[in-house]
Amino acid sequence: MSKEIPPPRDSGFTTSTPVPLYWAAYGPRGAPRLIVLHGGPGAHHDYLLPQMLELAREHELIFYDQRGGGRSKDDGRSEITWRSQVADLALVAQELGGDALSLVGYSWGGLLAMLYAIDAFGGGGPPLAPPPIAPRRMALISPAPITREFREDFEVELAERQASSAVDQLRSEVVANGLRERDHAGYRQRLFEISVAGYFADIAKARDLTPFRVTGRVLESIWASLGDYDITTDLARITCPVLIVHGREDPIPVASSQVAAKSMPNARLEVLDGSGHVPYVEAGPALFASLGRFLAETELVTSD
Image (cartoon, rainbow, N blue to C red; front, side):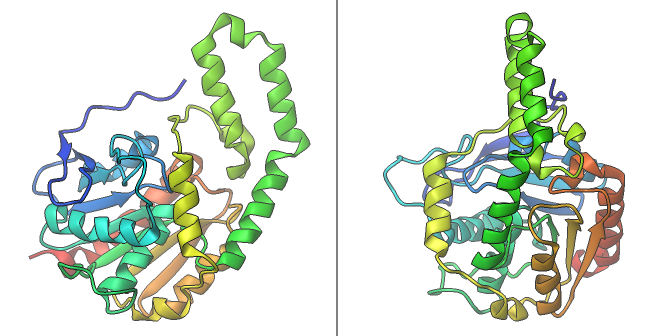
């Protein structure tokens, strides 16, 4: 079963964005604030919990459901693009980011943070109004690929993993052990975990996960809007301190994060051995130690 998620300290909906976006706050009020960007696209923040709340020991965390996912419902007719997600983040940063904008992005959220920062540091598309706040620091966990070519490599690798005999064995076991008849909720939970097992270095660690749902049309429209993308050159605009943490066994190529780290002048990459795409589950102590060091190093820069 998934682990229990504590209720947020505070929650609500944004008032400045075109669509009200649900947000939830954890951690001590007044502590250094981090805006956490979930993956997907088209998912919601809950699946990062409760593990990511390790950061709430010393920081105030603001999670929000990106437009079209979770509790941030749109009308279902408007096209949602990478650009609209960047524009939403700019408004969320104005409304909820605090005095010094710090971003923590996971998977697609890592790519979203980079796309936003490119814009905030003077690149991107047409100017946004109001102008986006430049982040003072960013931590990117298992960021989505920075080029279409790297994304294609990821898609092939993940498909091969999900079609492996080891994952097939998990599917056979869950059918044979009668779990569906004994515990239907547990059966659905196990099916979800098997559906994402290919993201893990060790598929046995795909356990006790918080299930999530991806809104398909949002996923498709955002990736379609990126087209044959390659943000490598534009990353040079991002001058704030950046930490990238990437699992060595992530189906997303480590090479993508290596190129990203080399392209940003103040970025560094830490590769976690024995971890796939979900280090907050697979390698929690190593991940949070890495994040803790980076946040401590950059705290004086971001504090007023």
